[in-house]
Image (cartoon, rainbow, N blue to C red; front, side, top):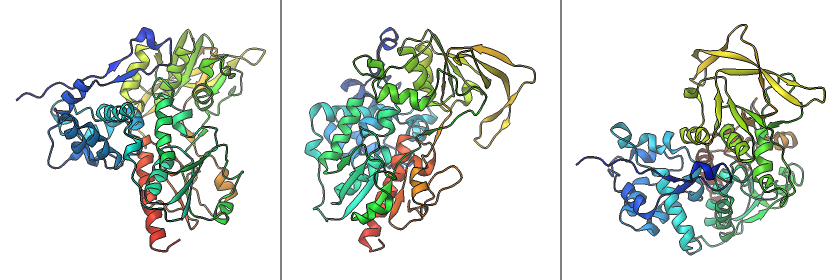
Length: 464
């Protein structure tokens, strides 16, 4: 029997997308989800599970969708994943579980991410989430979770289910970490993040916002306050810079600032929210990852006349998800490739007027496996823009390491842990971007699952 074509998810029309922050991907209908689930071969060796950092039993939940038993599908997913409505939207399934799908070799892989999202959205609509909460009796052991991003959410949920008294500390005024400040509304609606965060509250997790660990409390003070274990999931929120002349000119943003002001502080709803943000008529976003695409697509929605992605390699080497590149192009973002900024140019008032760039060509592969960009001598040119957004990555905030020298970090500022996510200070554990550098949501959750397992074992066996 011939294999059916993969079901394509519906999207908001482009003319509507560019004028609002409404979610672009509209999800699968019930009929589409069942049709797509029936494409699954139910392979006996389950290669897709090997591609999932948190080990979801993918064939099992897909089989339940095909049988129209959405509640059982939801229960299977939630055994391993605390936030499926989020991961179903933002996970790069195409390089993880879907890349391992047997159908990948002969046709198109199963749309695993879209099916996960369908099940999670169904559970939200039907209000079944609270009904599904089960947890062990309280053991009166306190655990601190520092940071409320993907790894922190995973650890808090896992330990709360096991009966621990979990307190989550978040530096910002809303929990969710990168999920609320870094990913735009049109890709991840904040009502979805809030719903998944409420799941933690329903589990009994005490979430304390506006609390900066390293300032409000030190790690040692948390131990003195009776916490048996401390988990650090503070991410990588410090932006990297180009370190080229003119980088302090007016109208140059880091993507971190630009997206935080837009997403978390609702700049796109000014003046209803008192967070103005200026976007000029010609915007250059420097970088080629998902964050660069998010910033470029946000600038379009904020009224920029022209928006360019400036990237030193070709489109083939871009780390951004293919879907996000396609969405950006559909929405009018232009691509200035094989281009390396070397200097920002300003006027007498120190306002950005352009970027001096070099044209590049690709050489041999570098440590990342991508071909290394090599400057073309004498190819300098001025690229006229009035706004620039630097989106070349982030690294961990050094605050905790600086205030707790017992916690060792590497040269990039990432906390050094063993294979079980134990840090160098007894009773301290870490996972997510704080140990990985920049990683995906699900990769952060995968390391969080290792950390929560280790914390439970170490407490149970008396090691802390």
